[in-house]
Image 1 (cartoon, one colour):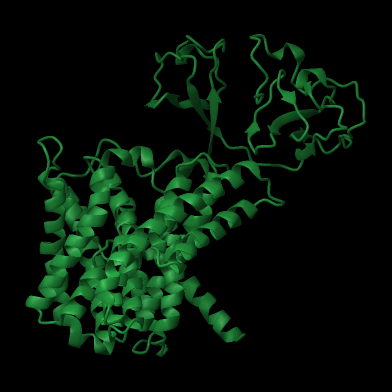
Image 2 (tube, rainbow, N blue to C red):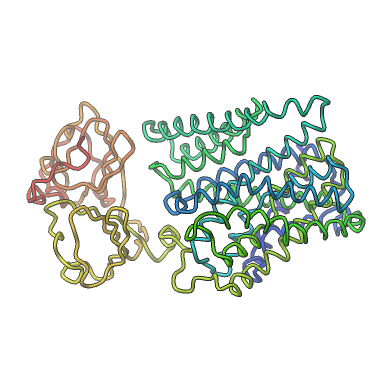
Length: 569
């Protein structure tokens, strides 16, 4: 393996990561930064790298798009998106088809391209780029009214499979004389295999994550990564829509109760960021800037037509129909129309088109359209939103609790309030809460309550507490001990066992992977893993060792309410 290539690749990624800071500082979309860097390294740039291997680029970018699609589904909050789900999915399917068809007609009748090339251009640029849209919204701290942010998230994340299917259909027409006769079967296989395998792989993944204990931490994350790749590859191998499959797989997994979800979010956030760097940089590297003047005028015409006609026409046709009260407002439709940025998926599909024989001009025009879309639409999106009075200044949903959970200053914990709990019936101001601890939110069924002093706690509430994070030091040690069949703690309550005075059981991990906070009446079963907190001067506890120390804080009289042992089924 050429070590120079490895070193050069690492340097490129390093430069891209550092340059992405400019995106946050100046409000420029990240896509634009990576595009420009790719051009600087390309054949007409400073380093003059003559890279024109479209087959390799197609393979790399298609693989990178798998993670972008998965993470788009995984990060979709179905509970928040449900009110706009119908509009979003219609926009992501019928809206893409309408945008592609209107754009293709413009290219054919006005621009004078042949029919196949017109259809190819319309198909490739028909989807929008969620990553670019929301990087701008987050940078500018914009939260859009009328649930528009959720609508854009679901629509942008789910419309790539439709654009991919249209691209595949046009490539099928190009590749064989009987292509038209194959289209109905191809459409069926694209949809059926995507739905079938996405659900199947999701159910298998959830089952394994809930029941199987991996040999080392992090293996569950690798398992999800492998399953995501398989959810794309298998249906794609059978002429199914692999991108639709991995997107649905991500939605099901992201909205399921699986462990280590925060870890998965951070891992795939990094993987997706790297995938975007690869795609955007390769686009800039592949393009030959000296060839762009010949396609610049038609590219400008296509960009203007899509921004002002085809995208708005499809949005108004879908969101402007229905009974009064269900139709979207004019200002929402205008924002959604303007937020139709072209990005990563269009790039990948353009490369795919060139590999399929569409010609270099298709790629060059798509490059120009994407560049103008990100630079102009992306930069003006905050101003357009404010001008249309669509910015919600009263509340911001740009951060979740997890954003603060991972910071060095704050830690959040959840506390369930059962019947008989001392807090039931008391107001927040009556609770004896530790100094520097705050009740952040109260989850009551489907409702989230921001607590005040007179807010009364009810049985069944889940109270989220916030406090200062603890920084680990050397005089405290956490160890794990498995309860085997011969272990003397097996099938006993914590209040019934003897442990050294300077040792505390702080967690019990059940065989199903669920970790509970123990109390005196918590039972320990064979197969449980006990998490111990102890000083480094305490001798190692052995299963057959009998001690006369106290119970490390888990006293027999700790539970007065007669509640069942935590974790028993």
